[in-house]
Image (cartoon, rainbow, N blue to C red; front, side, top):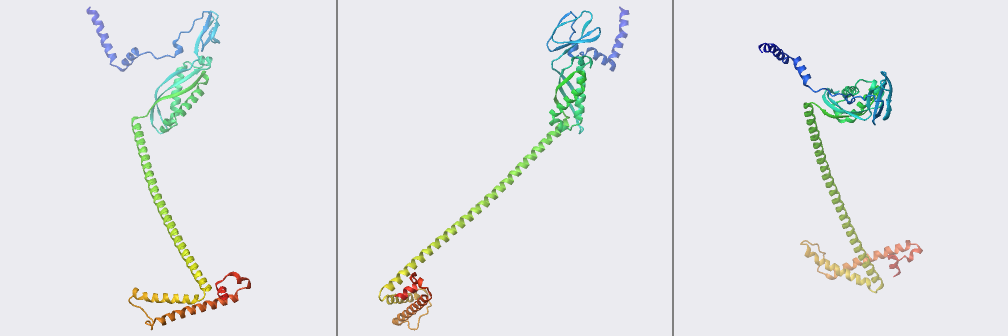
Length: 366
């Protein structure tokens, strides 16, 4: 019992020293960690040669005869030669989705990003997939990571965030170009998450806030500008309408006054014409007109004293008969001048115009 305890004590001390070293910790971690995930085709057991085999749909079996490639079995019934034929590889012709681990990439403007994605590929040539590459899934994963780093290195941060579809398309084209000899076709690549640094995210948020504040201020200033323009246009239209209304009012007033003057003149002309006609057609008409003028002269002279304190009176203001005689002489001289002008007008007129009905010719006839 004592010898056993003495033998185990050095072993425990050595185990403790090993645990406290970095190599020991890595060894312990590898011993208890989960085994790496192998590709799907390596996890399945290869079918054994039982002479008669049935190949499932959407699968292709690569058969080797005496260690050399023989043929590819398509879905359905297959006959194998025992001991000589061996099913070396089974390729799934279905679309496979593999997860691209998170990795870091530096953009053209020196921003470090963390990205992960999903790659969808399909085996199109079972022979090349079996003999062209050792581990198709691992190779396509590494190729996707390196291609994504190369594509992001040619783009800025803003372009990477805005043109994700273009980035996915470029990665798919680059992978297909490199994996053509492997018999694998990359169908599509999708970037799931892009994680910029926290400081860059804060700067982007500040930029977005500043941009929105700028837009708000621009919209507010444009609104104030448009409001001032509308107020000025309204005042301008109001002044134009007011001036047009004033113009129309003045035109209407002038037209009304002109029409009133025209009607008054027409009435006075008609009255004068009738008076003249009455004077010509009646005996003693001129004497009656002279008497009427004398009467108006006397009445007008009587109103002078009422309208002004200072008046100018003739020398014989107390002799009414002399005032009437003076008024009659004025009327007679006016009538004589009218007859003289009418006679002169009649002599100058043509014979064809004698019947035109002029005022002078009518006086001469009478």
